[in-house]
Length: 469
Image 1 (cartoon, rainbow, N blue to C red):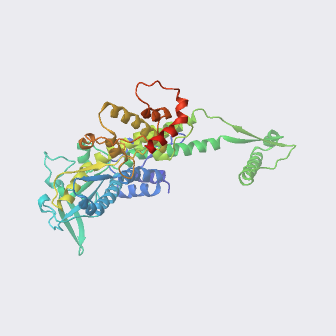
Image 2: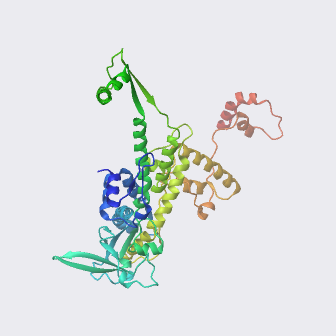
């Protein structure tokens, strides 16, 4: 079953013929679709998969770094837990993008009473659960008051079956990692059981319009390329006996179309039959498709290259501005969706080792320069370094320490007062600039010098005399 047919049968969308394709009846748009619909869309549509999965994959592939002063051993100990968090965040965000929300539970010291808030000073171990969708773990609305923020309820509920008996656990918000889908304003969030929307709900209508629009245009182009058969004496056949004549014409047309379809050609009587193809030209079809495509791309939340796998081409199409924009957007997305989560989890992980300050988390930048761009950057920085060195802002030792210490070139220069107060060791110039400079030490002061060519032949003699003395 196609996506259009599935959605039409389930939600009663209005099928329109022609180029417009399928447009959703606004009165029938649900605030939140059920799991069956969303699972079907995710499984059957490459576009829906890309909308839900691409950004989390990019965010996790770039990830970030924990900055921890004077504790390199702790960083090594936390490496596996940080990798676990990366995979957890990636999966959780994919599920949230699909369903509108997802959660994971923080297990602290293997506590069994999850209704109590986490005590940061009594943490010995931190573990994490699997990802739960919004129907498994959900906000506990019984404790909500008018003063509660609907985006941050104080408690959640987890329903599960144990020994064929339905059990419910109450979980404090400090133990919940909540991943969010598409933003909803407060009242809409409340109407949606305190969850955000699936990303597919804003994407599906433009996607179906683009999909059906292309299909209908292709159908129209094929339908309007019509074969016209000229048959000698056709009017005489029809005028003699209309019913029988009409049946004869239809039978002949069926034979011709069948041959065209199966054999890509047709055999005609050269004396009594002739076939021509009439093509109708459609103006503005490309503009229609481009408009539908632009609307679909905008609704996806991705760029056109990301959604359609189309990349810049041509001599001047480097894609550099697009790469810069995508990197900036990705950094903003990491911080808005995962920033508070990672800071809270880093605080809990470090509390295992009784570390409560002097740390920071920094997201990595996905923008990577090309080799030619690296050369231009280094060339520009060398000019700037020379200028500031001449002005006395920093010296050669600081440049060498900052730029070239380590396994790779560092574009960031770090000022170092200790190095600044030192001087580079003077290098002896063992190669004389000219023979005249070397000979001058043998000549008494106030002596009139001969042409430089004279000294070229006498230098060796003078040096021999000095050695003998």
